[in-house]
Length: 342
Image (cartoon, rainbow, N blue to C red):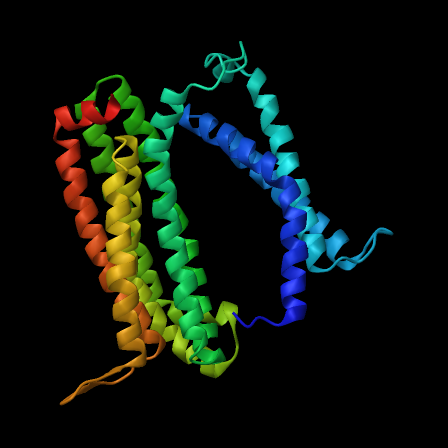
């Protein structure tokens, strides 16, 4: 990508250092989601909070060479990250001795790999992973494209994206909670109560989205001022938050609906919706609106960074509509639910 060789060297050394933490983070994530799936969400939160403090300390020590250690720069950040992942694994391993973990029989005996069970997990899990990847990657690609417009649009885009992510974590968490509760209720064959959980989660998410949208509309100048005092960047970012205010309504509700669908083990079609909505609609449309198009008899004037967010908003709106229809169809079909459960 034409990255400066010095920066590429730092990135390579950072990745080489974090690689030592990969076994730990894989095991940690598996145990973390097991705990959350059992309804025990507080212990992982406390572990991450402790890891955050340790991460800050280790980064300070290893990046800048404090406490007599060598100054490693970006590579030091990689070593800090690897160490924190092992720290999280050690802490969550203590949970294995608690009653709710013992009840799973996880450490009672050793089992050889069960190909059928592994395939069942992959069938549900791989589409979830691809969906998340498609959602996250589209922001990276759009960031690269906006970067070609100059530093001011890129800075404003970064501010808008950061604020959007900060508000997104609540509906994403509601989706995770809905996934856990729906999965539990489907397992106990209480399908009517599962629908109530879905409805409640969506209404909570929608109400939250409306409040956040109003906050973004009326408090956008104050929010942008937290990030920058550059008038040129602030002027663009303040306008972008108007797009985010509309975007919130779709983004928040689709995140919760996607989580509910995962509770039903309905994960393949949401992956397709993300592929079509983000990559076949949002990115091409954003590119066309952002850079403009020339036709034989007419032309579309470039809207710059605003065009990309307009394209993203439309694409996500279509994803949210598809998610809603799919969730309604699945949640009201006992035969479909039991087929997924089997």
